[in-house]
Structure formats: C-alpha cells, structure tokens
Length: 584
Image 1 (cartoon, helix red, strand yellow):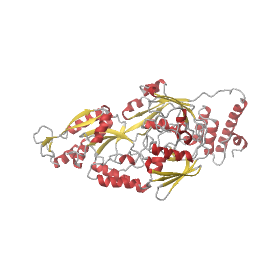
Image 2 (image 1 turned 90 degrees about the vertical axis):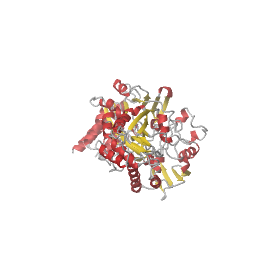
Image 3 (image 1 turned 120 degrees about the vertical axis):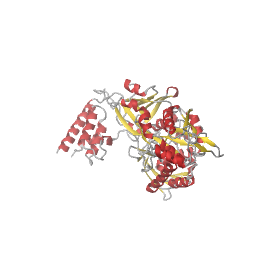
Image 4 (image 1 turned 135 degrees about the horizontal axis):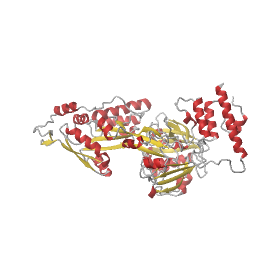
C-alpha cells in the first residue's frame, strides 16, 4: 500500500509539473531554468582531437568529451557505447560489432560503419597519439551493412575490447577522409563528434577549454549546459573561493583534501590512482645484478615510514608486483619485504659484503677484483627528494652510503631507459592494465621466462590470462628489478550543488587514466540513486530523486526514469504515456 501511495504522489507531482509547463506554452515560463555551468581545474593538454591532444591522460580526457569509442567503461567495468554488442572469432582475430542505430555526428550527419572503417584505416597511416597498440595490427576492416563492422587482425588479440575498442575514438568519414595532416588540423570541423559535449573555445596559452552540451547526443541530453576547464594556481584555494566546482588531488596533497573534510559545502570522492613510485636498481651493473643484494636493499627500506611521514598517509604500501591492489589483475600474497634491518644485514653478510676497515661502510669486490666501498648515487626528481633522503638514512644503517642527485624529469626518464644510473626513484601510471608489465623484468636472470609468459598472456582469455598475469607479478616480486614503494591515493573534491555525479572508473579510463572525469558524469543515469548498489531502487532512494526534482537538480523526464526502475514493467518515459497510462 505504501508503495502505491508513493507512486500516486509522484504521479500527482509529475502531472502538476507538466501542467505548469503546459500553461506556459507560447510565452516565458513562470520560473526560467538557469543555465547549468560547471567549472573545473584545467591546464593545456593540446587541441582535443585524437591527433592533436597531448598524449597524456588529461589530454585524452578532454578529447573524450567530444569523441566516442565502440565500448566504454563505467564504475563497474566495460559497457557498450557506439556498439550495442560484439562477438569474436574462436581465435580472437576477427571482432564483429553491431552499432547503435540513430547516432548522429554533432553536425547532423548520420554515424555508420563507414566511420568505423575510416577510423582504423586512417589510423594505420596516421597513428593516433594515445594508444598502447600498433595500428598495423589491424589487417583490414569489412562493412557488411551500415550498422555492422568486422575488424580483422593480423594476430589473435583477446584484449581487443579493453585495449583498442574501448580506447580508440571514432572519427567521422565525411570530415577526416580529406584531411592530409591530422596533427595540425584545427577548427570547427576537427571537433565534430558524437559525445555529450561540443567544443566552443580552446586557448592553449591560458589552459582554457569551453564546451557546450550536445543536446542531440544519442545517450540523452547532458545534465550540464556548459563545461569550462581553466588553469588555476592553487586548486584548493580556487575551490574555496568558488572559482571552480571540482578539483583533483593525489598523494601528498591529502593535506589540502583534509581542509574540506568538515566543510558541508563540499564532498570528497576517493579513488585509485593506478600509479606507483618505484625504487629502481640498475640490474646491468654489479652488485645490483644480484637478486639477493636487491632483496637486502628492500628489507632495509622502511616503506611504511615513507608512507606515513612523507605522504602523510596519502598513499598505501605498493604491491611488489607493481599492479595496483584495486585492479582486476592484482595478485595477492606476494612478499612485501617488510622493514627488517637484521634480515638485510644477514643477507649482505652472507654475500661477503662486509666493513673491513670499521669506517661504517661495507665493501665489495668489483668486477675487476678491486675492493670498493658501498657508495652509490640515487637519481630522482626534486618532487621525490624527501623519499630519497629517507632511503639514504635507512641504507646508512646497512653500511651503504648513498648520494642523492636531483635531476630534471626528462633526464631522469632517459637515464633510467638508457641504464645511466645506479639507483633511481621515479614513478609511472597505467598499473591497472597488464600491458604496463611488458619490460618490468628485463635484464634479470628470469627475463627470458618472463617474456614468454608476457606474450602468452596476451593471447589468453579471462581466468587463464589472470593466472599468467599473476605469474608475471610473482617474478617481479621475487627478482625485484624494481622495488615498488607506494601507490598514492586520489581524491575528487567537489561542490555537490553544482554536480554530484563524480566517480572513479573501474580499472581506469582507457586502461590507465585515474581521473574522476568519465564523460558519463555529464549524462543522466537513473541508477545513480541506487546508493547501496544492490541493483534495486527502493523507496528512500526514490525519495532522494524526488527531492532532487524539487530542488531543480533533475528534470521531470529524469525523475520518470527513476520511477521506471522503482516500478518496473510500467513506462513513464514519455509525457504522453505518463498521463495516459495508470501507475498500477
């Protein structure tokens, strides 16, 4: 009975709202709805096309608001997008997609399979700037009809949905077919897409992006009318001042996040950063080429102290297999090498690395047989100087003297890649996806075995692949070519009165991007009211939707969508049916 009464009340509410709207037809509404504009922190990441963006996560995000992919991800994982469904051949070399009908480009032209074919054909000649796949892996693309496309690969690729179909933005054939240089292509035609937003203005010098709603988006009209991304000096101060409505913080920035914890004007969403800070050994040099030596160093580093003291508990201890603990591919139970100075000294003594002259520094015989003091240099960037100093002090207790050299990020990266270092501290993202592990064990005694497993997992599906990815992590944790230190936490702090749909994507956007800027936040999802995520809209959750309607946060049509979930089997999506069809 209570359920029926609630539905009747909602029906009266919706009918009343409709009457108000109808009575205002032909003139101004009694209460005009203000344009909903959202401002967030920005920064220049290139012109937002698949070819002109800066090849970093924020660049991809800015582009993804405009361009769509065949598949996408929500907070739970992969979902259909421009494709309603797909299938694969037994050998995973052919993938066939059934496309969503009725999709239009933002200039009104219809979206068809020809656009998908053009995208992959064009990208073979003009690589897009983001993806961890080689377009040459595509053999050819067939179009049996306007809403079916078959993509034939050179080799089996079970990971095609996550690594390609869910990452590669589809471009319109009627625009790009005649573009000779996509990397310099600009202007209105360059940003014709199918996504929820359309680019209005871009100013790279100011880090400024302005978008407007694509009201003809095939996934429904966006819940915002305007999005502005602008560069701000201090995101926390800009939030407090009301200059922006949301900002992202990571790791050591927890100090800024804590300022908002007791402020009722803001809410905080926490997610996984898919990022790791590593302590690198140059495994091509002695004694770093000894796995026992590397393990001794690991036991001698107090990671927990670094997490607590340096990051202010804004991070968690890293998985020694690199992959983030929140990833689908995470292997649990790996050795953590918890701080154990006695164990570290025991290993070093067994290796005959001893302090023969009582100066507090151990010695070893180098490859030429010369007695050499344990004096090494760790290179890092200024950003991780504190971590380096903590490790320097820890290793001093082992009789190892460390000098810290701060270098620019470019020099740090090239030094690690070229082997021009002894120890190094640096970090990287992408640790939600196994592809980040490709070269992790290079140069170790098990590198050949490791590479064979890596190639095998690329050709495997589901649980078989997960087991193989677990084996890769086991080898990394055992061989320790790097010692992962910590995974930073990440937060989105936002004003819920402006927009309260922020969330973090399962296993990252496009396989590696941790930001709470999934384009789905700009589209209405009635399941957002399923607060306990049990797959059921209950009465209290329905009342939350009703309150949002009362406060003009959602429209009548959107309230009806929630009502459909509360009372399945009845249709209230169209106004006509809403007032002609009984609710029970």
